[in-house]
Length: 195
Ligand code: GLN
Image 1 (tube, rainbow, N blue to C red):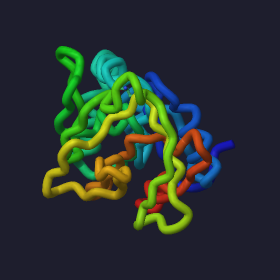
Image 2 (cartoon, rainbow, N blue to C red; image 1 turned 45 degrees about the vertical axis):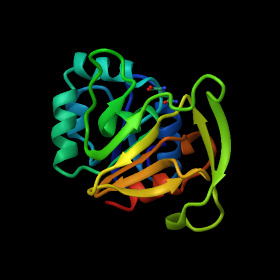
Image 3 (cartoon, protein in one colour; image 1 turned 90 degrees about the vertical axis):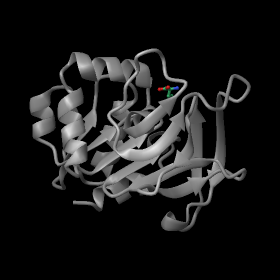
């Protein structure tokens, strides 16, 4: 059931958008899937889900959404990306497929599939000072890491070895892991606080 809170969208071309819709609705938002430009026009904020960034990139361009999305993000629309969504929001992506583009917005360099074959998927607890206790139980699935953070962006969370896995910049939030699949609601709540 749609909530009475802000009307927010989840980019629903590919990936785990259903899980994000459920979390956002659970938090009281009026959350809707976004597949067309007119649906984007109707929302005040957007979540970009996990999935496969190269496919998401192709589909956003094919559906004529890439330019409107870039414009809204640049204009300050609250936006939250998880995993492939974080890649979509990075200004620079390494190990991209040929021709892969991003929407940008975050002053960071991300590397796709940064954990390699041995460590494709794993779970770990991460202390996130901004969120307080308890630590975040983070699930990584063929996840990217943030390799460098420019002056405009801010680190929110790192692994024990110091690698950056969550960042924030103005109205944009990005995590390399998937809170939407672990009942971890605090990142979505932080996104919704922006309305
Ligand atoms: N490896 C994927 C990509 O490059 C991201 C994986 C995910 O979103 N779980 O887009």
